[in-house]
Structure formats: C-alpha cells, structure tokens
Image 1 (cartoon, rainbow, N blue to C red):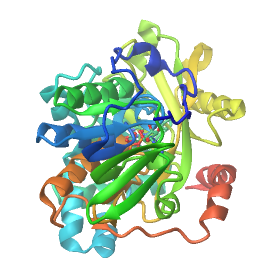
Image 2: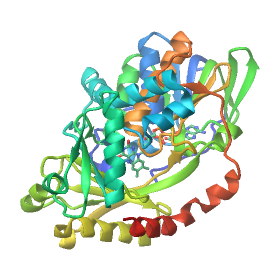
Image 3: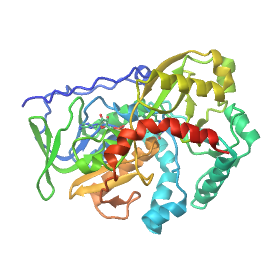
Image 4: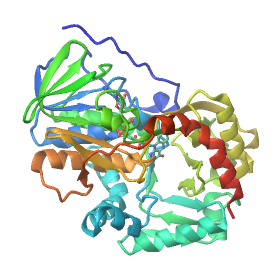
Length: 431
Ligand SMILES: Cc1cc2nc3c(=O)[nH]c(=O)nc-3n(C[C@H](O)[C@H](O)[C@H](O)COP(=O)(O)OP(=O)(O)OC[C@H]3O[C@@H](n4cnc5c(N)ncnc54)[C@H](O)[C@@H]3O)c2cc1C
C-alpha cells in the first residue's frame, strides 16, 4: 500500500495548540484496516462525536483525517458553546414543517447542556465554563430583533433573558451595546482540548483514528457497500460519514456546492492584568454581537481575551489589525495590551442558515453547515448521524434531507471574501 502523500501541518500558531493536553495516537501509517463498519471522514467535533457514539455501541469505526485531530475549525474556534440559531421559529417551521422544526429547536436549546454533559461523562479536560453568553445588540433595531428572537425561543423553553443597556454594560464591561440576550446555559471550552478529548473517548471505546491521511474518493460498490480511497489505499465500509464542514472539497461534488466557506479570524491577548481581567466580561460570560461581521470574545483559563470576527482570509494582517481596532473600540481598556497569537479557519454557511444532514446515497451521509455555531451544533450533528446509522428512521433532531447545490456557487464562493467591506458598511449604517 502506498501512502497518500497529503500532509497538513497546523496552518497557524494558535493559542489552543499551546494549551491543549497532548493526544497520543497510533502511528499514522500503515492504516491497519481493510474494512470497517463505518468510515468517518474528518476528525472535528462532528466526526469525533459520531465516532464516540458509534464505537460505544460496538461498531467498528475508522476516522480518517487529512490534518491532525481538530485540525479544522473545531480545534481553532472561539470555543463558545452557543445554544441558539439566528432564525426564529416561524422561519424554521416554514422551511422544515412544524414537527421537524420543533425537534431541531429543542435540540438546539439543549445543545449547550449536551456539550457540557458529554464533557462530564467522558471526563474531558477542556477548561469547560458554563456561565452564560451575552448575545449583544449593536444598534436599536438589532436590540428589537434580538428581543423578538428571545420571545420566540422562550416559547420552546430556551433559558434566555433580555438585558437592558445598563445590565449589558455591567455584565460585558463595554458601554458599546444597546441591549443583550443572556443565554444562561451557554458557556465556553478550550476547543482543541475538547476535540482531543472526544478523540480520546472514542478511542477508549475502540474507534481507530488515522491523521494526516486525506480521503481522495468514496465509491459505491453496491447497496451499503462503499470503497473509501486514500490514493492507492482502499478501505471497504458499510457506511461512510462525511464530516468535513467548511473544509468539504473533492469527495462529494454536490456537497462541495451546498455551502459557502467563510473565514472567522481571531486573536489572543497576553494574559490580562488583574484590573483588566475583572473589568472585561467580569462574570466570565462569552460575548458575540449582532453585526454581519460578527465580533465575539471570551476569556481563557490563562486569563487572556480571545477576540475575533469575520476576515478575508487567515493570513490577512490588515484584517487582524482591523479586529484589534474593533476590540479596543468595544473595550477601550485593551488599548495598550499586547496581542500574542492570531489564527483563523473555515466555517460552512448554508443558504437557509440551517445545519444539514444529507443522505448522499444509501449508507453515505454528510453533515455540514454549522453556520459558525458548530461547537454545540457539531456535537448534536455527530450524535444524530450516529442515531441515523444505528436506528435509521426519519424523526431525528436534525432532518435528513437530499443535498441541494447553491446556484451560482463558483461565483458566490469567489465573491464571499470581497463582500466583507460591504457588510462592514451596512453594519455602520444600522440604526
Ligand atoms: C476562527 C473560528 C472561530 C469559531 N468560533 C466558534 C465559536 O466560538 N463557537 C461555535 O459554536 N463555533 C465556532 N466556530 C465554528 C466551529 O468551529 C465549527 O462550526 C465546527 O468546529 C465544525 O466542526 P466539524 O467537525 O463539523 O468540522 P471541522 O472541525 O472543520 O472538521 C472538518 C475536518 O475534516 C477534515 N477533512 C476535510 N477533507 C478531508 C478529507 N478529504 N479527508 C480527511 N479529512 C478531511 C479537515 O482536515 C478537518 O479537520 C468557529 C470557527 C472558526 C474557524
């Protein structure tokens, strides 16, 4: 067997790479399997949660990852565990029908609790903090829209409270915002530690994980019989799960065109002084705002602030400078603080803003479209994929649908990074 020579080193030096517990894996080559019940492509939160659930039910599970465990967005994210979507229940009901919308809304509301309970159950060391999320409004109309969203989701049981401008300032440490929603069950984690912890738990149940092995093709051999190719290497599987979210490319052409990749970028400060640490997000909430460019932040176990927003690409120094200016605008006390790390990654945005599980063919499923909220939603998607494999059925927390390609996909994908200045202008014009 010849090894497929694609090797993906870490793209940038993130804070998380320095603070996550090490993960020991078996040698990456040769892959000691010619067949497996399930092959999972992608070792992010989605793929690893699916691996954990399937392996714990006694299935043979093989995870193949092009980079390292958590190499994609899962190991680079802001680590915010956010249990709500951007859509109200009416839009969801119109899109999915009432029963499926209700299941998805309820699963989303429970998604933060689900993350923290997985962490507890598998004793994952990932600096988990469940103290709530401030979803903050940058203008009066956004405050109104957030209040409506809160009422809508409260009707389904969401633990969300509307905060006045004064309460928002008190809890965020910033005078910038008009109002906020406080999501009490939200929180934050060290994302790479979480991904590695999921991998460790999956392996403890017998899952095999091979990193630095990119899948090049998935081919149908018959009903529930698939060949997964890595260059010259072929592995047979009854079921294949494509869990590649914003890095989906080349394995399922239709999936490639079902989402648009966007690029959040973020920075971490030096450890904050005691004064700053207590002034910014004093009660350890996370924060994310209502702007189209989505600015967000949270503190870390080593007392830094991680702050980010959408960028053009992960290497654009100009964009990192813009994000730093924005951080100082929101928290003026950061003016003289040093920024020590900067990094970013890909997320998958879908046209309907919903996460998707697609049945690409019998026994070939894909999950993608976390729309920048995949810490909690990826954890749900992985579980639901496992339920679909184990039990079949259609009444799942995330509906299983046929994949739809986005019209003018190539053009929209090319334009995506270039619309950011326009989005920034629109944000500034909001009243
Ligand atoms: C900078 C940043 C900040 C973010 N902040 C937050 C946040 O605070 N809260 C939140 O909820 N969400 C956040 N997100 C989004 C969140 O990280 C993602 O939605 C989530 O991690 C997606 O998980 P996943 O497992 O589906 O995909 P990923 O973690 O992206 O994993 C996909 C994996 O598939 C692998 N892969 C791709 N192709 C192949 C192939 N052919 N063969 C083998 N492997 C392959 C990739 O290498 C990758 O590791 C952020 C994202 C970024 C980039």
